[in-house]
Length: 320
Figure 1: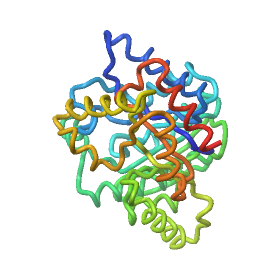
Figure 2 (figure 1 turned 180 degrees about the vertical axis):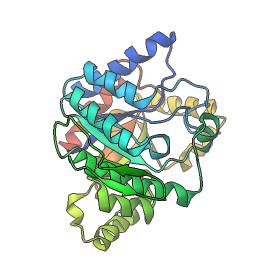
Figure 3 (figure 1 turned 135 degrees about the vertical axis):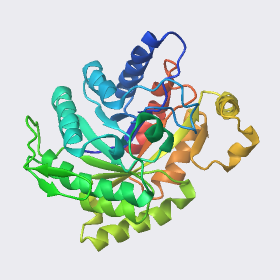
């Protein structure tokens, strides 16, 4: 499993009626596959996130969507970025992602994290708990999920979860990869060092060197060869053939959120420009810093036919 160039679909607010949503999602996934992306990812949320839109904007359930994308694509890997552990029983999650792997012909990745969006938990009836609670639950969940993905039958009588010889059949492989997402240098990175094949970083670009040093330290703490843990970075990209138009798209998105476009210069996770400019920035600030790959989203115009292809064609030479 490798994620060198991933395409995340973070929003489903598209022109047209609700029945047009999934065809637009599937078109983006097929365009990404043809343009050199190796993975397509969706968020595991029930409401839209504050940095993207209002909570009542359209949000598809992740694994139903990924299952449908398995039939809409041929080769591209499929994942949530990332599954909220608080929403799902861990044994059931192992079964869900393994089923996705079977129906997709071995293309599933389990992306998982501790969960953080409190409003969803409150309104949907899921326990939120404290920061410590959520990471304790994630740690126990991984003790169940990881062996189930490998064909083992775990038994755990934990503080949060209990299983007794849990089985997980059928499986296509004993190496279904696990990806953790986040930026926590102690808890998230430690769990990644213990259980994950891949870690996706969410942080400002200037923090990447420090994050990589912390990942090295957590791998050393558990006696793991750091080279066996892949690392990618999540970037929000605003791209157009015209640099001016790309900035207009970014500014339109900022105004939608009630933000002052002048403040965008301070946003160190957004990359803006023409395809060549975006590729140059990603190479200089992310890949040259030592990250193995990049996952991008195109919040402003990814649903427009041709935009995903434009981004992929510029970025794929950097990672292949």
